[in-house]
Length: 85
Image (cartoon, rainbow, N blue to C red):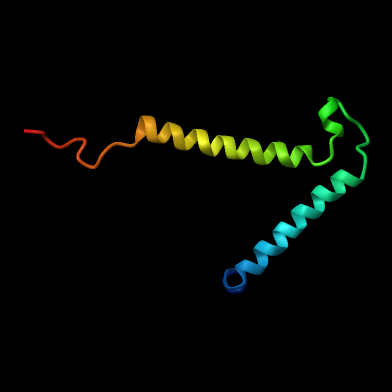
C-alpha cells in the first residue's frame, strides 16, 4: 500500500520530479567539465561532457532511424489488406 501511495505522490508532482532530474543531469555534466578525468583511453575522453553529448546524440539517432524504418517498411495504409475490386 505504501508503494501505491508513493507512486501517486510522484505522479502528482511529475513536473517537479522532471525539474529535479534535469538539474541533476546538468550538475553531473558540469562536474564532468570541471574535474579532469583520472584516465583517458581516447582523446575525446578528456573532453568534458562528451559522454553526455554522445549518449544524447546516439539516442536521438536511434529514435530517428527506428521511425524512418517503421514508416518505410512496417506501416501500411488502413485498407492495405482490403480487396480492391
